[in-house]
Image (cartoon, rainbow, N blue to C red; front, side):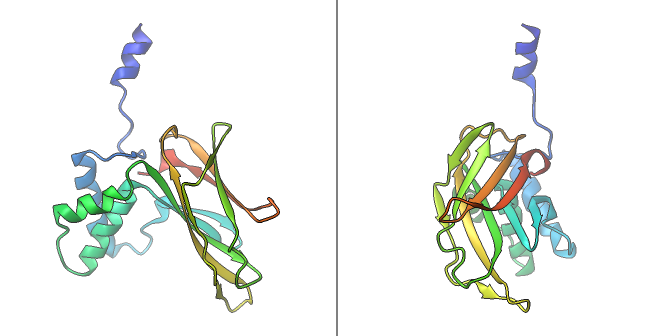
Length: 184
């Protein structure tokens, strides 16, 4: 009975991921975003590097709102309440990943398929947009930016999930271990 009572009063730490932001969280995200214009390393909290030039940015609701506030600060304008609502509406109930992937051909990422592994469960993307014409780098490799959206239902905000990107032959071409408990 005591354990049940304690679980009802437990509140996640302030720096843990939340799929829905309270008014206090919204204010904090705007403050963090506006203040970030002087921080060259800003954004690392939401970035996972898999090596070899492959990385993923996790677009949490907090990150999305902080980014909107950062962009408005760069333009020297205030973020209006409707801008806040607009930024968060697209994120509602979703976990969004921007993956930077590397390959040998201009269209290497065209047919990639993302899957999110959470607690022995495979979650299929509700939306996947792979870049069809990747940019060629100085090293001859190509870099593609891909957008993957997953439903947040059933994903614990403190979980470590694995984003796996597979090619047409169902071979894993990229794996990203994402510790959601380290992100706001």
